[in-house]
Image 1: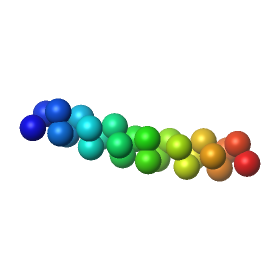
Image 2 (image 1 turned 60 degrees about the vertical axis):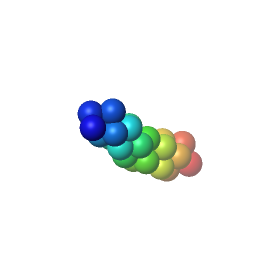
Image 3 (image 1 turned 180 degrees about the vertical axis):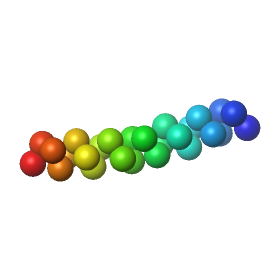
Length: 26
């Protein structure tokens, strides 16, 4: 259960950081 939560959190963080980094880069 904890692993699933960690994966979901990591995915959410990447989902936020990647677009923000892309926008900041552009």
